[in-house]
Image (cartoon, rainbow, N blue to C red; front, side):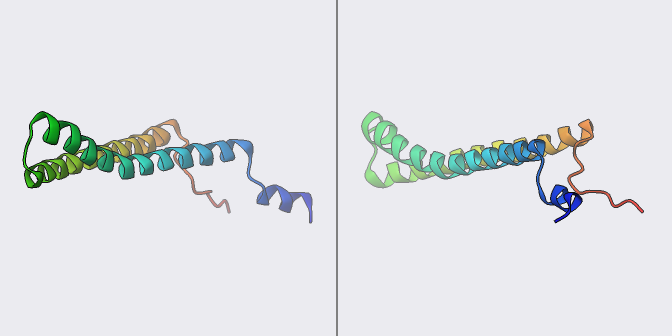
Length: 104
């Protein structure tokens, strides 16, 4: 294999760091989007609605589900906010072009 073909097939260290940073960010937000509503549901049900307010089982389930939905929307808002402004910042810096331009 010629050296020019080998250079085209390898990824530079900067691209690897950028891909790792993107993967890490998306992975952390996925964990947040999955875990936060579940943790919110069970902690609010047990500590707030069952013990503190002493609501009935059905009422505490309903209020816990509402709090889990609010937590999910908060996590989704954070993810969308980060994704939108990360793309905006990259395009302002001039690094937003991920697609290689074909030169004639």
